[in-house]
Image (cartoon, rainbow, N blue to C red; front, side):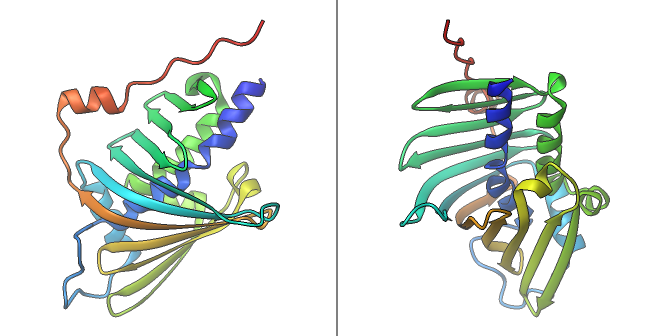
Length: 226
């Protein structure tokens, strides 16, 4: 059970990766005369995507640390249920969801979970997947959304309704212009704060079968120590 518990904790890292996918349009710059966006339009755009690739810079402020932790990497989403978050700085790591499997690898080793055998891990994954599958009804079941817009500028605050996500996260706030998501802030229940800025977002990206096989190959879990 300790390895499953550790994997579930790692799953909340996927939230910062998942939220960029709500950007919908994802063009490099918003149109000059973009209409006032809506939550419905953002989710509808996500429902139509063929795949997403983006870079991110994540800055995490931890109460017990004097300096924030900055992480740089890339993320990939392919509907309906494949997601990969890779970091290059300050260290390399891979976090992958592929259907019924979740896996994580870093310098310390690899860990894998069968979601069909772990109800708690499955709940986490379902909370993340609903963010970018375009299902607004399910989004509202799992989160309390507060959407506001002035012209092309908009913000969306999400508060988890149910445990276990609500035990970890107080709220998530996204800020964007037109169809472009600019930044995301996640406030955890313990006061830790993560701010993520996104760039080079490609929406409707088509991946070849070879690319998909490479991107979503799951690392084998390390054998437990004797």
